[in-house]
Length: 480
Ligand code: NAD
Image 1 (cartoon, protein in one colour):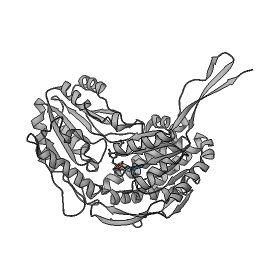
Image 2 (cartoon, rainbow, N blue to C red):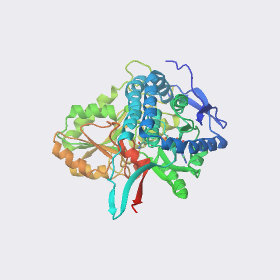
Image 3 (tube, rainbow, N blue to C red):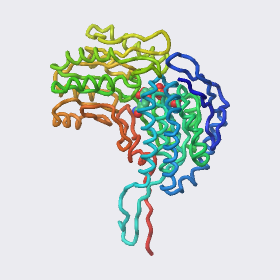
């Protein structure tokens, strides 16, 4: 697989320009080789990006929903038309299998823009009326202004879509910063947007969190900061936003509990965990990584999952049938390894699959199962963000629910049982933004994605995202 060209230019006021700041190497995580260098935005370029977004805001906000929708549909078409190129770039830059990028991600990304293109034409709300005699009230839902959007490295183009779609559909303008590790598909999108959108509606700046992300959020003209990233980064962004009383939208980490009851269909559970625990090498905030299995199914689950996981095909992006790629960086691989190494020292823990790095180049780590983990073990409590699933034995469903909720995280969860009533009862008591029953990880544009507790707040996708990227206003008219 060869990508013909690596996009390296920022998008500022509708023009693609080279960054004037420090150059960052962009790597292929499967080999560790440098793909290209991308220069950060300078302080002056950051200012220009916010200038452009501020200048573009009034005209963009004044367009009818129908007209803004037309732009979003064009973006979706352009993503589809360049689907092979986007998939190739994403797969090279993230290490993920080309087939996953092409068949799973690109269609879903185009769909996000199509969904928001439709949704913006169908907002619902309270009825206008005379709530005070002689006065008519109406509710408006209006955009906020310039949004700073900051994305992570696990699904770069998807996260860009989740942030841009609702923000621009609602009439905001955006300055978007991709992760310094994975800017390529976002920069390629910028090249296409330069020919689709009016100048300044979307601006793309590259760079690290401290040199570009932090000053961007501090700019007093930024009205909202949207982050998908680590909990600690979310906390820094809240502090910075607090000083300027800015709205925040935070999609942070996860540690999804997977409750497996004795009456679950073992084959489906194993197939589900093999897929949803290791997809994207486990670098997924919803990854099915923290299993609680009741007494009678526990031993069989450990045995069958360990054997199933050992058959996951690890390899290079374009290899036939490859199911899992590397971690994003040597640092992330070493971090994952250190979690597993510490867990393996515990007397009650057994590593029943994987447990070490894979291959002799790139940042691979084997799909790993940590059996016998206990509730207070670090491997159960902390987000690993790698291909590692822990299994904890619980005595019954009540203990599983208590353990599942005993977590700082609150993004997603699943329950596996053949009794729908039991599963619904458990789902009603889990403190997570999403609970799946007899599946995991399934996302659709119409339904919200977002967390509770340290996993953050604010919803991506769905009508709820349009609410997050707008404010409710009251207009009252006195009759005479
Ligand atoms: P990260 O927090 O290190 O970086 C995310 C982004 O924030 C990057 O663009 C980075 O440059 C920027 N950033 C860092 N410090 C900043 C600062 N002080 N001010 C402004 N911007 C700053 O996270 P990551 O390592 O790229 O991504 C992995 C994390 O993201 C994991 O914890 C994962 O759970 C989380 N994640 C969450 C979701 C979700 O929907 N909840 C989705 C994907 C990833």
